[in-house]
Length: 303
Image 1: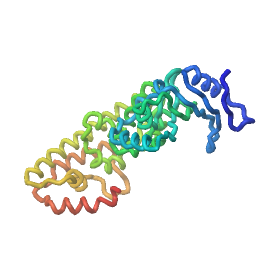
Image 2: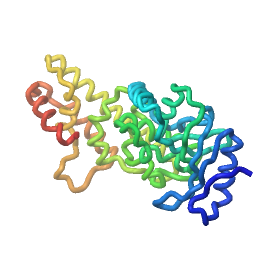
Image 3: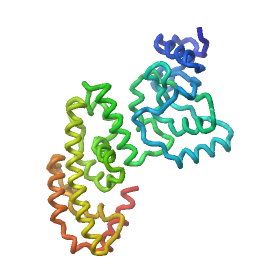
Image 4: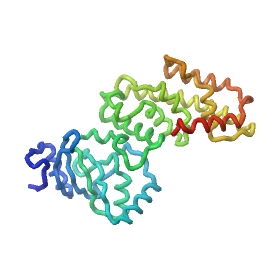
């Protein structure tokens, strides 16, 4: 029988947690302590796991080489690793981390054989990436891609459940739609469309397989608007006006949503009307100084 510390010492760890600690030992790791975390008093395991058994969840964003390099330099300078990563185990011999892939990669590059971890028994932690990830702030593209990867995993793993059941994990419905768009085009202007999407894109009812079909339809509507926007931007650039904020400028002047509106149109109505407005946009009235002024005024809101 493996031996480990139990905190509080008078407590009896649940059989499932004890079995998980024994699994760690069988997988070549060391279960150091079984303890109740101080907020919700959930049982967790502090352990050392073999590097070869720890992987990122399949839903995570891509690694940032620049962040890995900076983090590796700091760890080398300190000559010490002090930040355990959170993991859960989908099956014996495998441990997924939803929030520590950059740190895991640094340890791997430094030829470490063991990874210090906090092992959480609940499997659903694998889908709490956005809430747990604190080592590098997500940008819009990264959030959206992670959400759509989680979504596909849930279609397979939890087909009877739906978007509203995972509202906390997804954070916002528009990340789902944007994820579909970024998958096809990594340079999609998500930041330009996000203000509109945040207002009209809501979590869909029904199970994941049914909702996913509606999501694809929504992504197609946004893609139509982006194509119309691209044609207008090309005409503006043909007039010699080049500015990185030009897409935002056009969308701000063609959106069917206004701050005065108390009731919002549906997603479909919004984007069909948006396409009509974009196609009717008079590029002859656009001046460079107007775009520049709008970009300057938008900086505090973006921050």
